Image 1 (cartoon, rainbow over the protein chains, first blue to last red):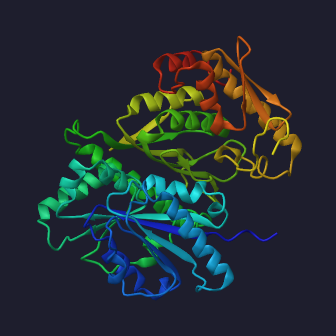
Image 2 (image 1 turned 135 degrees about the horizontal axis):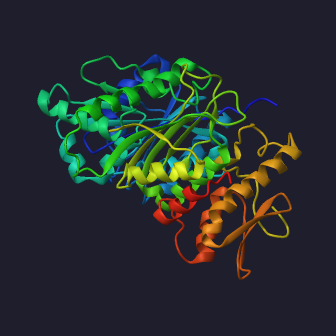
Image 3 (image 1 turned 180 degrees about the vertical axis):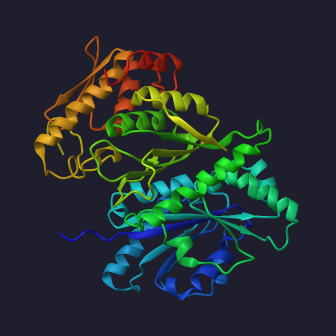
Length: 346
Length: 111
């Protein structure tokens, strides 16, 4: 039987006024993304963003008068089912990717969860990269005031720093440093300074590149390098509850024990585990298994084709809000019966 | 759906993607699946013992979680285990509980 084809869903999120629609406009101009359907959510009574995209066809859907993560969450699944149905019937072009632009106030987790939990959608769509735009001028203030802003950054696979041409260099540098502590693994683009590589932003995700060791290496290299550097110069960060850290283990670990531990942790503290991802050396498996989760939503594990490098240790990266790193480390070690080697704290 | 317990099947929890792909999700190696289920019960029981709970296999399709006084809950997969345990206990099961960690460190889960 042929493997099912899942349409990747990318979420573009970012706080109000951080440049989501401008980014989307630039991405859609790329010929490589010509067969992309777009779903825009606006909070206001009168939707405007879709006019800015200057694209009028049936693969552009506007969900207005509410926020996707709460008031009109059901409409996201209906709109996606409708798009899928029309595609199968041939009444809209056969799009191969769906981009969802959320409102600036949305918590990204319920949106991601909709794609995975809906009994129809989960057989036709899969989650792709989450791209978060961050305003270089106002980003630090927004991070201080809005918890959604921190969540949007923590779940990002790609960060796009916007308005760098308007920001003071010192302020932008402080923001970049802060971003690298909240989410050290997400590559950062500066929208104003470089041409955007649309495929790298949208389509180079773990699922699509599971068989390629180079991609997996890049997936991990960023956070390991960043975390070592950040640890050396870490200032007093007691005011920040969101932090990232990496753990590694020698030898092979038992998949069942690990699953038991992670399901228990996510059941009790899922709201505070903003992100967990890792590459595991699993007993009885020749190749590594990659895991990837956002709060209580764990993606199906990926059996990778090969190890990304000569390092055979299991590596895990956590982004947590207010959880004690030492306890997590000890707890995991106690479940697995082995002591984790702390790689770094960021 | 199971006609006896009413549990809907087929959702596939992420932990079912075992070291050997397909053991749980496709019926490729039934013996191996039974072995995996037995291992799963052994691993979970070490943690559940701290709470006075026991887990046992039910027809190789679900699990039965029981208290010492005989209250039971059917559990489909590891995703449902902790919610069922907390329901039976009436208190949270926290992997970061220092007392639990000390207990597990004293006696490794591997036995």
